[in-house]
Amino acid sequence: MNKKIKTAAVDHLLDAILCLQTKEECYNFFEDLCTVNELLSLSQRFEVATMLRDHKTYLEIAEKTGASTATISRVNRSLNYGSDGYELIFERLAAMDKAKSDSSETE
Image (cartoon, rainbow, N blue to C red; front, top):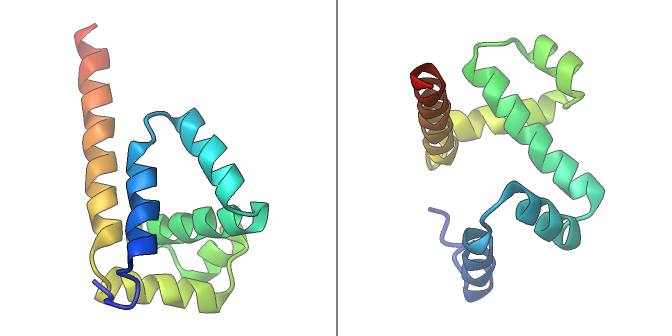
């Protein structure tokens, strides 16, 4: 973890995020917290990470997301040399998808 970001203020923000319980609550909180462009930038980076993980080329990613090659490169660096935050989320999303799939098969 980057020690520069570990502050009381960031801890407080993360505690607030962990209190959110629904997607609607997330939309409301992040709409209040971020500008539209900030939120779109965050979602773009996550989409870039997803596409990189799926072995898409920089050109494919740039065309689909509108991200610059600098952004794609930065996200790629985080995927390869970061704190494994993206990987944790990808694993949890895959587990959620599997659980949804399994529950729909049993119905």
